[in-house]
Length: 398
Ligand SMILES: Cc1ncc(COP(=O)(O)O)c(C=O)c1O
Figure 1 (cartoon, helix red, strand yellow):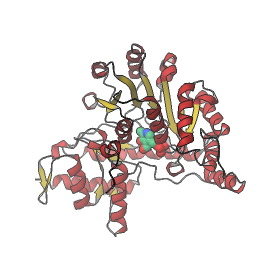
Figure 2 (cartoon, rainbow, N blue to C red):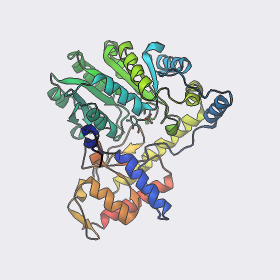
Figure 3 (cartoon, protein in one colour):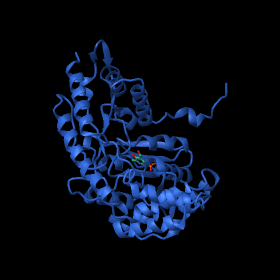
Figure 4 (cartoon, rainbow, N blue to C red):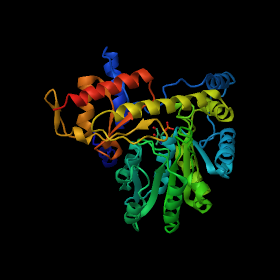
């Protein structure tokens, strides 16, 4: 048997992809499964974006581009950041990657040395923690379940140490749906200003999926001086329903951008050529498709929030963005369903899937074992039926 390297042995496969794959397999076997596992919009990629990719292929744009992406797409990103976020960058600051996940992976690889500490707010997105470990870093967790998922700045101050190299923030957030306000980000910026050695990743992949008339703020807008050590990450996946196209990007100080470009040149080479071309069209078109999707998501957010709130014992915070909701379900622990005991979020998800054919993601994957994550990127009918089954499940516990 081949002895794998010690870093890969330490990390777990993505729990969200695992649960989605399990639910798909059960569906294929003919079971009536309702999945709340999806990490992607349930809408098709808009036709004008598909047409742009097809045109690009037919024009012969099927060869390598520069490893860090095409100038055309970098310029579209620069224009977007200027127009929508009031942030000034040049093409040399931008790297196009194979998805935002790839952008974050690359940044962590070029920034982190063995033993460096990286601060995350829990609940956190599943991949951060494993990417940090893969780079030899040590995740340091700030709990936000005690501050209703808002930035827990008092706890943050206690967790900053001489070894802190990086902090990752994500707003709108996966899995809680929280959106950091201008005031919260101002508080965070104040702390970070006192620690000039800390690099910041701001993951803004859900920027456009924001509800109740709230606005998205990037921490770079709050305090321009942080831009020198800030890397902004965004991508096309969620906003344009382009998860499978694998295009994400980062905006960084030139030395970081250059290092990531070098890393990409020896790993993935360029992101897919015609997907980059179609991304330019996506970003430059003011489309109703995206606006409609956001309106639908807001209605579904209201629907799922209302229904989950009716479940006795669940504690639910209304998401302000993204397409996830993260109820506290620990009141079900130490109870049984059909003789099967629930002891944590993993056994909750497991028994729920086996007994009611409903797939949810255990909160432990996001660093919070008392919770589960549901994605509301699914139809109203699925939301109504699926939450009804969860309700029956909790009522059947003894
Ligand atoms: C918080 C967060 N960041 C980044 C990503 C990565 O998105 P992609 O690699 O598809 O651009 C995701 C996807 O689920 C996410 O939830």
